[in-house]
Amino acid sequence: MREFKIIRGGRLLDAGARAAPLRDILIRDGAILEIGAPGLTAPDDAEVVDARRHLLHPGLVNGHTHGTGALTRGYRDRFNLELLLLATPARFANQTLEMKYLNTYLGAVEMAMKGCTLAFDLTFGLPVASIEELEAMGQAYRDAGIRAVMAPMLADTTFYRGIPGLVESLPDDLRALAKIDGAPATDRVLALMDEALKRWPHDRDHVKLGIAPTIPLVCSDELMLGCDRLAREHGTVIQSHIGEAKMQAVSAIARYGKTMLAHVDDLGVLGPHFSIAHGIWLDDDDLRRVADRGSSISHNAGSNMRLGSGIADARKMLERGINLAIGTDGAVSSDNQNMYEAMRAAGQVAAVRQPDHRRWLTAPEIIDAATRGGARMAGFDHVGAIAPGKRADIVFLSLDHPNWMPINDPATQLVFAEDATAVRHVMVDGRFIVRDGRHLASDMASLADKAEAARDRMLELNAGEIAKVERLEEAVTGFCRGLSMKPYRVERYAAFPCGCDEASGFAATPG
Picture 1: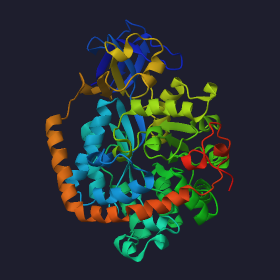
Picture 2: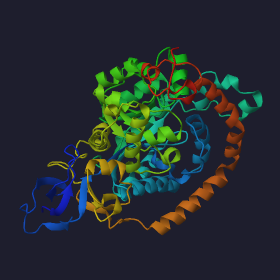
Picture 3: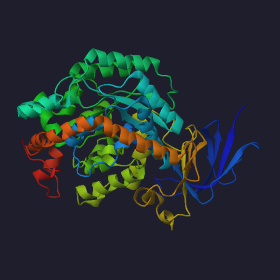
Picture 4: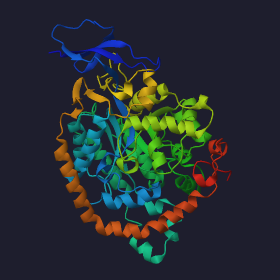
């Protein structure tokens, strides 16, 4: 039996026109059937949803996150990438299956309550996620009600071996503390990934399994090629951290004799199924390769600033025809999962990057990246827009909120004024998962109690490893700081017009 809903009286965001006209939306079995002027004809038995005094926009798409970091959010203020890679495995360790579910569920609920209905989640396992863990974390998204790509981060090389010269730089006493070796065998990682893809129990229109060779520097060529083979065989998507920090860019030149992106492309793994997280330290040739292969980039401006990694040239990416998404990154490196903040950060860093305001990102471009662009990157063609044929993933913003008093340009206000506090309702498949600001499936007080208990237990279990990392911190970060000070030619940074110097991390000199 067909199920009809008619949303009446809402203002539907038309970002390109910078308008929000009154529109009715007819939904049948969770999909948008028709959009029309007020008074749109609907079946007599259609459920009426009153959207008066609300702005409607497509569910936001988080192009890059790590959903299993919720329990470690906000534990450190000054925190760069090398410190994150060094320190967080010690804090993440010894999680039970229930903890990993809770971590993921917390992030998914936060995203739902802040207007996000699809996330590209690079989840984790130490040293590699089990099939049972992946399925449990996928269930967390199903229970929270939002869609996801669950892409477990894979590696067959340790962090220490991934940075040329780091191991040799450590004094003997610290080298004995570090987990220099012990990464899982390549064939084991690929076999587990293959089995997980074959067994995946969840509805792939809601939660599908992707693949995340985490950083090429800690992935052998064999692993990168194996991930690509599996993605093509199983019809899924890949995401990898490429060009995130200068110390990695310098390390890639030392290892490959070329940029990290050029090496990955020369392996033949780039394509429409492949996306790049961050993409800060990419030169013009890298961007040409990304565009030529039809790959996507997730622009994670807030996290890039939080970690001091640099400012990606999103304008040049769009000019090359690259599909752009917007991401928050995980709660460890961005502290929250607020896509409105991620959009605002994308607009702000575009302005900081250069004084010519004509090259700054426009609000419609940012909204497009945070909806359609992210959905395309994730391989979810059935979402990303409020249009006939798309699933009814819709966010209702209250216009009786200071963010919208008065309405001038709704696209600009969505990016620069909205902060998730006006989110009133959220629909996925035409059904409310958030109603009147409340996540319908959650008891927030109970969640808070569980999160506090899990945090305390993780700190207790991991105290010894955390202490070791604290002893290693200065030696490891000092070596990486030295890499970041080395000359590295990235053409677009060499021409950077703001006058930043090499030490800032935002400019480069010819090498």
